[in-house]
Length: 206
Length: 267
Image (cartoon, rainbow over all chains, first blue to last red; front, top):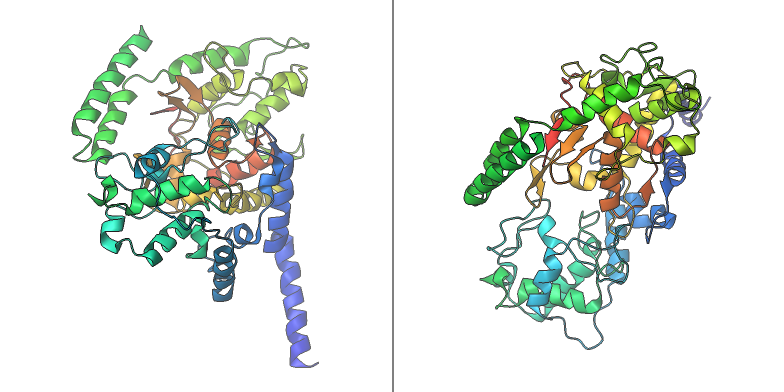
């Protein structure tokens, strides 16, 4: 028997032995999805199709111990970068006061939320922003002085707008929602959040 | 009366919190929790749950006293610390609430639809499950968590529960792991347990069910999962569904070795 065949046979035996104890990783993923589809009810705006993952979600559903391959990370970032739609009028900075309200608002897209009302971004759930708001989370980095540290050059404006629009364009498997890509925020709302981060008058930069 | 004392304690604790929160939020929140623990209204649910367990109900006019929670018919003490587990009579892994539904159907003759009409209470519309779970889990207080994965279906439930924990979906791309896979993280001012590590999983799992001060309700682990998924922007997790049991199996097993300490009291 050639060594390659022997390897294949051994791998086969190992797979059978593992199968007795547990499913393969791929089988388990498929079975978990079936299980979830049978275990959730559609309610309000939350339909069962929310369980249908795109490639990014699929690749980012692994435990931290299973490191994401470099090529996969690059593919995620490339695909998501291509999805960013910049405003046709070229203006990326809106109203920081409106941005602050959006950053405070945690409503939107839950099955008990009114789909006719605009969603918030709930930035404070995970980030420090203004110094005045002490009730902030720590899942994401502090964004205090975000604009003061970076300035408001056009590339910084484009990066900031793009990051809010689709965070995974810059960091594969980022925990941050893709606010523009997934239709959580409108174009105007993303402009307003960009203003909160970059406008020199915003409390973030005081 | 008890409610009023509680309300006063909460207000006093709130004042302490407000005054000093700026200096060290975590330490102040810990003080607030201590102030709350002095009188836990969960006892009201526990008393009602014990009465419900013994009350003859349903078309068969039977009590739940013959219900087998895994340690033999009618054995309540320590039963919750070993759930979820495989039950041969149903050929299924079940958590506490699902097993209670099973017993309501099998022993009391209720239809599944009728038994599960009100999984979570709201105000005067109390849920029998929240009361029963309060009493039954209290009977495991001080018991060491010991969820076995001896049956193949128990191992499968654990493995699928782990998959669910890392499953990102919905418009916000959230998974359980988005908030619960790192140490020392907060959402707003609320501490988030890292459920992928033993210490975090143990602390979290052994303190549910809990009386939620902000809601004035006793909440079970089924409620905890349902409300997490609501905030994850997923659809509505069905009460006593196989997915809810699988995720519970994953989290309960990860808490093995810890001392069960609920019903607790939370913000």
